[in-house]
Image (cartoon, rainbow, N blue to C red; front, side, top):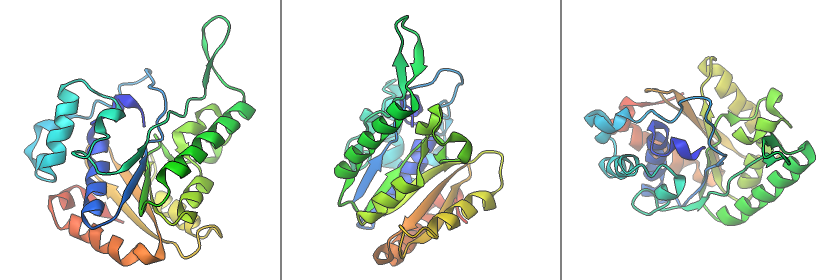
Length: 249
């Protein structure tokens, strides 16, 4: 997540899903996986949904709340951290791998420093979100790919061991997954591989795709005690106007 994305269609889909789960009785934790804003592209401009009644119908309260944030040019995650948007515990510390050299130019911290920084950042998130029924993580790109491991842009991904540690605290975990130029089975196979990990005992999976504007997935790693309630909550949501935009895989 980057602040410049605040209030876009991705936030509407993610927060709409979490509000549906909250309405079912789950307590929610959200780690934005916040990283510094980038400037090399125009991502974050998918806000035309705020002019369309078909989206407003899904969750009028959330739609109006995000519209006020975007219209007020308050595009920072802190403006979404309020009960009118989502009653949750948030972790919004920025995972920033950049560093300034003596000339003032931006560069990336060395790998050892990045690893230490991430470890400390993640431990703080565990403490902050402990005890929540559902923990959602919102990295820019989703589950880490081999080419990003240990690299400067690893902060744009979630690591499998991080998902497992949230799960070990008793939470069902939902992670955001960006859809690139691959078909659905690639991403659902990633989830299936995760579920075979020894540090995710008893976990079951569920995959939702948000199909409109900019396609994305929400992947669930479900605690055994939550399974029935999660599945019912998702089906209840899909029976509303959200069903025109989400598809279960």
